[in-house]
Image (cartoon, rainbow, N blue to C red; front, side):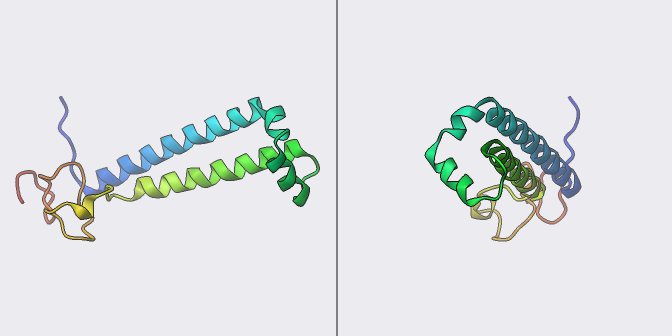
Length: 119
């Protein structure tokens, strides 16, 4: 079994990669879902009201543009969140002070040297 790399750079790269993968999945799913249900979405009254206030030439163009903007934003959001090395709830952990950015993969990772076994 390969050894784990416990550096800030490795955590950043893994987070960025996972953010990219999840963003691409959301992007693909959102576009496919919208295109496959376009007639149903076009019949909804809330989308028709939004389309009436838009400058799109037809409702299909409006709906596709809307989903492309939404999933594009989520792609960027996922990349930003993935690149953030902090884990959710990390600042609440009693072993770490608020604002500590070194909660990588284990509570055994040192906040100062990144060496396993030091606390």
